[in-house]
Amino acid sequence: MTNDIPVGYLIYQAQRAIHQMINQSFQKAGLPLVIEQWPVLMEVFHANGLSHQQIAEKTRKDKTTLTRLIATMERNGMVECRVDPADKRRKLVFYTSKAALCRDSIEAVLRTMNQQVLNEINSHEEEVFRKVLGQIFENLNWKFELKQKQ
Image 1 (tube, rainbow, N blue to C red):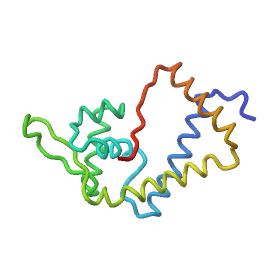
Image 2: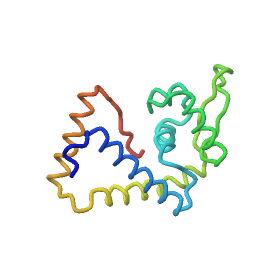
Image 3: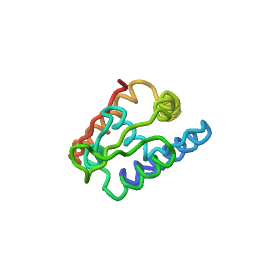
Image 4: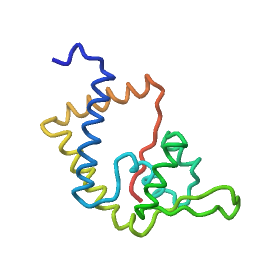
């Protein structure tokens, strides 16, 4: 079955399937967001008024991709960019009242998707899965922070 397929490819395909389902769920819920934008919005929810550079570092997104994501989020009314009063060359990103109103719905979609992904996977299997993923992250020296809802 999947025993001879490289693990990286399996993870990539799982990630693509999950992203597609989340994006479809966001769309069905009428949320003006795609999953690639969620880490950006999550960072802004955690610390409103971050610079593009700070968000890029926290999300590990390159500046070109990040600029495109933020521009789309701004057009959709989810964030607002303002000139930094301390440095006129920099823009700071703030979440809007629309984003704040959408936050619970976004998180509900993500919880539902998490339940769907883990359907028929018992708690022991989930624990082993998380441990293996943790080891993969460690092997790849991939560190990240998970922001909790404030």
